[in-house]
Length: 148
Image 1: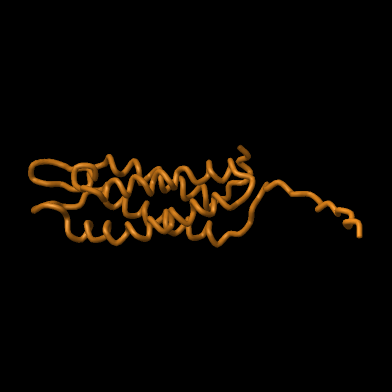
Image 2: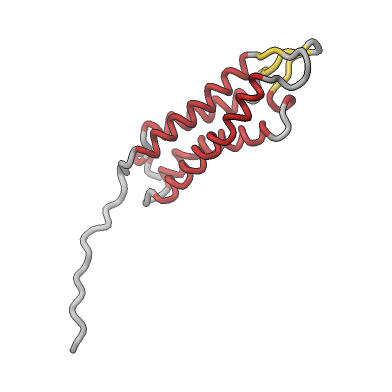
């Protein structure tokens, strides 16, 4: 692994992924019977948020492990696409809390900001075409012409 290949946007994406993953364990909604985390409030959305977070956290490690930028770019595309697809569902759940008499707590706001940060920083990483510390392929050998 060569961590010189990792760009700043990759690190910011991973940091936001870590914040999103931690926020899933924080209180998202306050109900009369007690606080609820994302794991208790959602059915499938919490799993999608965890998937986005884990892929975002993996991004710098994938970038550091590969000689070519093809696999890291594929991971970046998957992360930005998933974040884009999951964001409307999360925003809907922020506007219309599951259950009656549920008020938003800090975890919901932290999770929403983290998801939007993942989307933004990963989009920046996709636009950045630099590939630092990629091994040079070297000169292309010239082969002799075949006999005629």
